[in-house]
Amino acid sequence: MNIITSKLRDVVISVSPITAIVLLIHFFIVPIETVLLSKFLIGALLVVAGLVVFLLGVDLGITPLGSLTGVNLAKSNKLWLVIIAGLILGFFISIAEPGLMVLASQVDLVTSGQFSSISLLVIVSVGMAILIASGFLRIFFDVPLYKMIFVIYMIIFGLAIFSDPVFLAIAFDASGATTGIMAVPFILALSTGISKLKKDSEASENDSFGLVALASSGAILGVLVAGLFNRGSEFIGSLETDHVFGTSVLEGYLKVLPGAFKDTVLAIVPLLIILLVLQRISFKLNQRDMRSMVTGFIFAFIGLFLFLLGVNAGFMDVATLVGMRLAQQGNNILLVVVSFFIGVVTIIAEPAVYVLTQQIEEVTSGSVKKGIILLFLAIGVGIAVAISVIRILVPSIQLWHYLVPGYIVGLGLMFMVPKLFVGIAFDAGGVATGPVTATFVLAFIQGVAGAFDGANLMVDGFGMIAMVAMWPIITLQTLGFLFRKASSNP
Image (cartoon, one colour):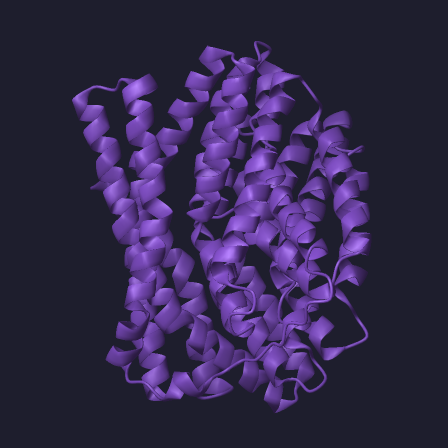
């Protein structure tokens, strides 16, 4: 019961800031229709209930699956088995990520099916699988993380030169969306187990981080490579809002229910099958432990279904409408300020952030405090959302104008900070972009882009998640630089 109470408290604290911002905007800036506001509030309750049950399921079933798999792979010490496990687990954990599901659905919606959600899910998951397997090989062959990240991002920016702006925006958005409340705990547990391949405790500590970063870079590579095979394709973006006002509260939820159920089955069932297979050939858990893990998967299924139902029927529509109406007011300063605060509360609202900050504090034996990490993350994400809006307001600013100098700084800092902070920072870049960012903030940005004359919805409506993923890389490595300075000057 204490665990449930703790989860409920954390999730309520997570969702409350976004709910409060919507209510403040409704009462003091732009009013929201009663039906739409009702759908949003019901959606908020479903998101809270869904996340509580889902996170409980992750703790009971999905994270232990990652931990057990990592430990068993480390024990086997077989290279071929490590590679195959990385490919299979990487693919299915990506498919199961709620944030990526929402992004894929939004891409499908905006392009009217020209870029289908299943296509994006498969492309991203293949890229993520390959890079997770590569991350296992990195640990196996003792390749320094910062060198691998540097090479990968050189390849990414080489591909980006030839990439269509639409694929560039979606690629970097997918990198953040694919590492959220499902993938992060699983990958962190998996990497902790795999890092036991190292006998040296310091090397093992450094290898506990970085796999999330590699996974998110795999998503970028997957979409950019797919873009090379689709050069010349023209995607016409449109943002239909008629359905928002044309449905009652009940009708709105009934409409998205079949899709939410289908996506939940697609996400959870493959992982459950993997658990059952591994139990038979490797884990050999007793009945009590196995029953606990299966119960966890049932909780994860119910929670994810409730979450997707609340997000798709309540959160997204209100976020889009708020973005549109703030943009239509013509007060650009207010729009940017509101965007900054949405970014700040978003990072506080991401459950995966607490998983990462807790693990950082534990791994560093308390020398790096959770509160300091959260402060640096909040400032970075607030800036990221604000400058994403500025990019829409100033059409001459393109996404690569932000990404190129930002990643040059981020990659340059790798050579100046403690190597532990490199993994932490790049992991945080993926963690910062979880379910709230991929739902409310993405829809908010698309609402702004859809309402602003001169904006291209396909280009300007995406890319925000990319910015949210990039800024923590800079801010947390800056924290690492300050940490090194403080350590060398007692």
